[in-house]
Amino acid sequence: MKEEIDQKSDRREFLGSLVTGAAALGMAAIPASIAQAADPVQDTDLEAWFGQLKGKHKLVFDVIRPHGIYPFAWPRVFMLTNEMTGSKPGETNVVVVFRHEGICFAFEDRIWDKYKFGEVFKVEDAATKAASVRNAFANPKPGEYKVPGVGPVAIGINELQASGVMFCVCSMAMTVFSTRVATSMGMNPADVLKDWQSGILPGIKPVPSGVWAVGRAQEHGCGYCVTG
Image (cartoon, rainbow, N blue to C red; front, side, top):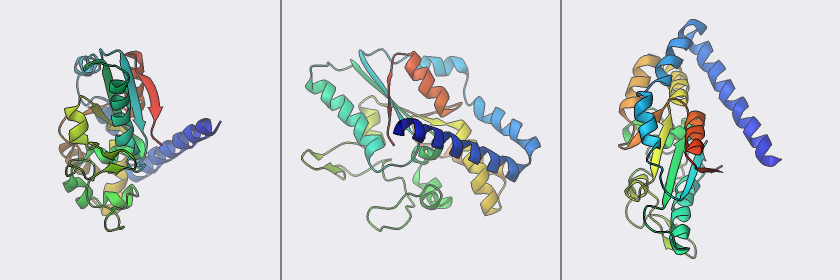
């Protein structure tokens, strides 16, 4: 029941973001922006990307907002515990979908700093306790993250990618949030969106929407896990 309520709340928040974006740009401008977000790459390329999911144990993690280390720790735990229960290399596949407010993790530090992502997405720097100006999970130092009773865990995006984890980011949410940020900063929304697209971390695939990606991953046999 709680999960159902959370899902309804998330839908309301996203629709609210769309309305805010529409008001900022003017209704006539929204269809063009959505069309731009809906086709970041050719469908054949996207289908081939999801076609990599050939393992026996497959899970998609739905990252809808920042939630501590969980969007990154849980994929690692899934892989480690599958190894502990006898799975061989290549038998486990993981997809992480950054959507809604979770899209912030798809970007390099330059974008975080320039557009004040810590304030926009309500992410606190663990060291300074101030709004973060960097993506703390993009390329952390070895041993930077530790789990009580477990010790250091390799949960950086770069480290998870090296272990075969696939990451993608919602272009629809990118369009909506870049419009909101551009409006608040007095900038051209099209320029800001282009800048954000140029600042996506290496190896992270833009997809038409996060919910589209969650659906595609499940069609390719993935179970589903929301990270908060």
